[in-house]
Length: 276
Image (tube, rainbow, N blue to C red; front, side, top):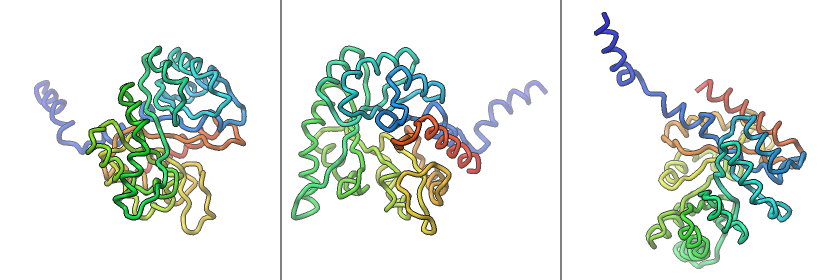
């Protein structure tokens, strides 16, 4: 009996359908808090924000900022370190952030919107978009950072264009460039989300979730996860395609306490994934 028990212990994980990928992608340790700095009615400082993130179970924060936050960049880094929170990503760029990267040994992704370049042909637009990103691409390479091209509407927000620019930069030898894709800027790609995700997957650095309005709902760009008609199916697609990278949980409501907004999104995510 002992021998049989031991054999089953070894074989069962192999014979049973694997659900490890499902647990991994939506697991607490894989979630990133995003849009929680200027989008917070309580206007928390670095320590309060880090406490809030820790309380909610986040181990990663993507840091968005405005001019008034520049003076507290270093404090933000230190407060995260005190609580074992990863400084996962930094929005756009600021010269004063560079020495802090070196001083504190952090390696955040840099997220930058891909614009909508001019060009007579698609090829010309792709080349122009890639060229416009080169100064930041090279800066990231010198610092050992990854650069995420961020969809934010327009030509540069289209999945196919994001992929084409990544491919162009990779062909030029810049392999640290990828894509950060946001549900809330992707309402136009609900119907072809599976195809878009499959195309982006080799380059995807982070996937930020949001509730997605259905055809019978009033359109709402920022919607809690679980309140829309489409995000449940989109979460299934994430599993089907096999994406296992980081998942962003959105704040992005300046008029509300961001802790409440994050709690709503976390609750919605758990309810939806519990039904998958």
